[in-house]
Amino acid sequence: MKSINDFPEYRLEDVPMKMGPWRHIRVVLDETGLSLSHLMNLIENNQIAFIEPKQPAERKIYLHRDWVDAITSKYPVANYCLLQRHLKMDDFTDHEWRIRISRRKPKELASDKQIATLHRILKSEYILEGERKWILPIFDEKWIGSTRVKYLLEYFLGLKIPGIDTTWMQINEGVFELRRKSLSKFHETRKKNLLFDDDWF
Image (cartoon, rainbow, N blue to C red; front, side, top):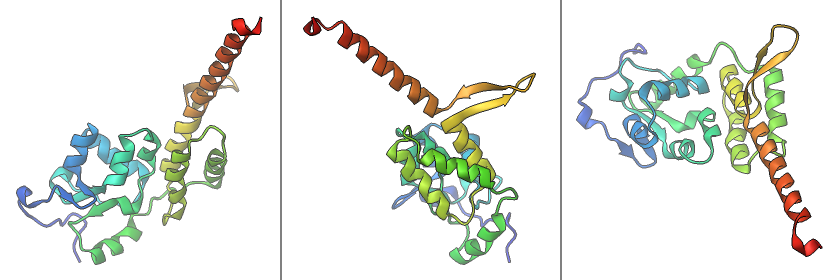
């Protein structure tokens, strides 16, 4: 059996850049404007089965256009919703890859508390339907890694760190708080406009 580092050799010009819905990572970098290291970190943080070679841009690594389109559109939450079916590593046969998937399971899986919080987020009045549609399939994956959920929770709820006493300091606000403030400001502006509308006098 091949070592995980035993990638086949071929000329780069023989590597297809597009195959149906699949985009080679070189194309993904061009379309998204991401750096190679950033893209590799995204894949790693989603904690799906992945074998990163020494020179990934020169290997047959493909990402599905649905995910690529989503991360460049209005649903940045898709950055943390990469599914196993969105990744294709053509350096391996389907049989070889199926064998390797189970061995790439992360050491730290999402805790019950993390999963419960994510379920509450799905029921929030501030979540967009498109965001919900991207998150739900995660629960059908073979596993949900702790790092993936951590980034999802930070995206929606923001990040807090312990203060110098028993309090917590908010480092950055999540999209829920930003949406709540935006909605509150909208209603306040609307109320003022109604109050000073000449038709009311």
